[in-house]
Length: 212
Picture 1: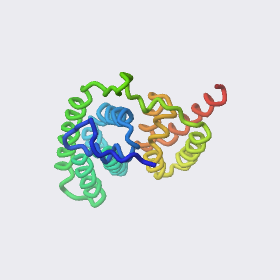
Picture 2 (picture 1 turned 90 degrees about the horizontal axis):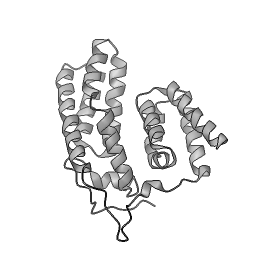
Picture 3 (picture 1 turned 60 degrees about the vertical axis):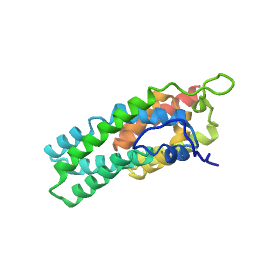
Picture 4 (picture 1 turned 135 degrees about the horizontal axis):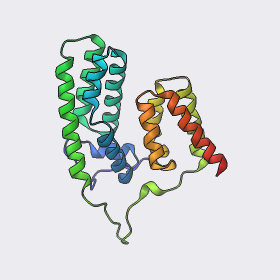
């Protein structure tokens, strides 16, 4: 059962912290990690879109706009989600306002990054007994994690775009059950439709599990 979060300690203007925490079962530590990942990996998205369009990779630009829309939506980054949705539609329809929307996306992403950097600089809250609140360190039952990894691999192997939705749906389990660096790598591969690389990463995960 999801934990209903009504009064989050983390306050980030323009970001729906309550909604995101409810989707993550109230796990603020995981939310901090996901926001940090967004801030670190998506700052150059607008320029990447420009480069893709200049190179004639229109389909890749549409996919990237879609990825941004989904990522921002799941993290409650409202302005980025809205601009990305408009941009995805404009790219798909071949509308003339694409350059202006890319500029708007760049501004929205930078604003979100500034908010995240300022908000996450506040120290992690401490529980009443003096220990840090580290919900994301709880172990995940391998019998729960492994079937989810296998399903994600099957979708990636088939280059199935729903792999991204599946990753988002089970993000909390994957983020808790995998090493942080491995989870970030896998997320980046899936979200950018680099499915062959994702399959290779997942194969390494299974090999580590067998050897461990």
